[in-house]
Length: 128
Image (cartoon, rainbow, N blue to C red; front, side, top):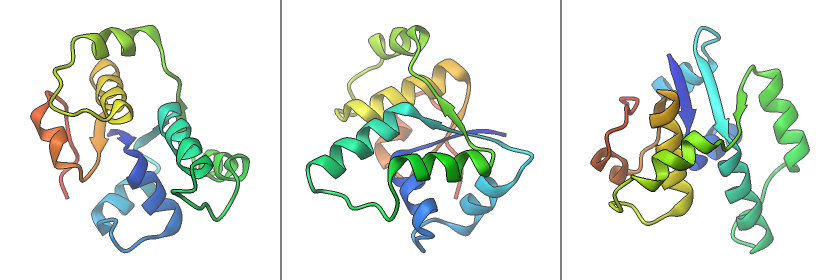
């Protein structure tokens, strides 16, 4: 499986939050799966930290190193993602979530999120 983690799923995973379904945690930790984190998620996290809406246990460099050690890839924002974004209907207004949906579509990734709005899009979602 090729998975793209939504920002809140990434945070739950890093914090070992019990809200993260065990089956999702197992899928993220399965070395047979390709796990990706969008740079858009790191950008969103940075904004929330700067606004005082989020506190991280580690700095972003440490988080990046932890994720790389676990074999998690970072997905840059590329032109094809933006082309998908251009044609994406506005069921969801959050710009970060919209970009994640476009990236998942463009890269044929399964999106890991508990955001119910994602089901309105033509995107593969991981079942919980």
